[in-house]
Amino acid sequence: MKLRAPVVTLAAVVVLGAGLLAVNLAATPTSGTPAAARPIVAAAAPATTAAPEPAPPPVVAEKVWAGRSTGREVTVAIAVKGGRAVAYVCDGKKVEAWLQGTLTGDQLALTGPNGARIDGTASEATASGTIAADGRSWPYTAKGVQAPEGLYEGRADVRGVATRIGWIVVGGTQTGLRRSGGVVAPAPVLDAANPGGVVVDGSPVTVRSGTELVAS
Image (cartoon, rainbow, N blue to C red; front, side):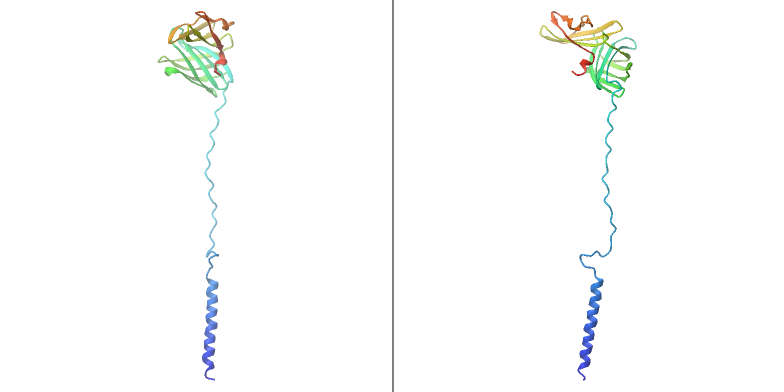
């Protein structure tokens, strides 16, 4: 009878230890279970860059303007087609420049050799702004014109020398120069009704006009 008490006590200790172990296991998180709930944060959307706005279409799709500087120092003609532009500036004596550029919206911007430049605005009826050529600049105004008025260019091979001729026809007058191998001379008379009839020193001249020059 005296041996049973230690056995009973030992059994009670075992039962108590097992109970405490079960409690501890229940309170300890497993490796696959988070100890505490974490708030879910959505990933920030990447920043987007707005696409650049397209350039405004030209206010005039196809047109030729011709006119003069305010003090009539030079004559100018500008041809535009599909946003592209070609111009010729000439004083009929020694100053001339061919320029290329664009018409964006109503804004003209053309450049040429030796700092030549034309800036300004254009509408169906008029073009106006500033011309720079031969180291000088002048304000200008040009009107919308139709053939026979306008801009003409001639090219020829004269005695083996490439020759380029420019004409501006406006207000019943012609202004232009001929350039052959760096030598400048007066332009021959242009018959706007028969531009293919121009001949220089026996060589026929190929003449184009207006917006035909824009695509070249």
